[in-house]
Length: 116
Image (cartoon, rainbow, N blue to C red):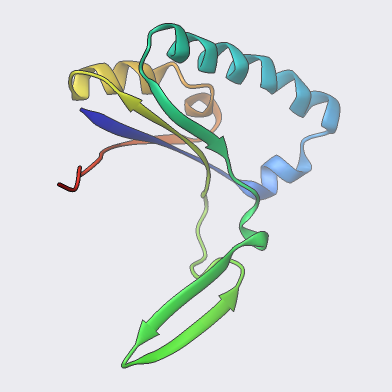
């Protein structure tokens, strides 16, 4: 079964972290990613750019509205993801609890609907 581990964090806090402190966080993510690879369950992962680089599109009543930046204000923003293939939700939760993002933000675990 495929699960998305969606990593949320506070962009304002992330921007305020000095570069030398931010670079100390990377080894934890590299180790976590390597563990997922070694377990043979990692399908994909990426870090996302800040929401200020996003473009949001909404179609309402046949009218297209394009907005630069995020559409909704939120305390935490989607910062990245891991797509994993594990037997069940318990396994996905176990892996999510080891994600470095869980200690400073939130990791949402969501099953993927496989379209056939």
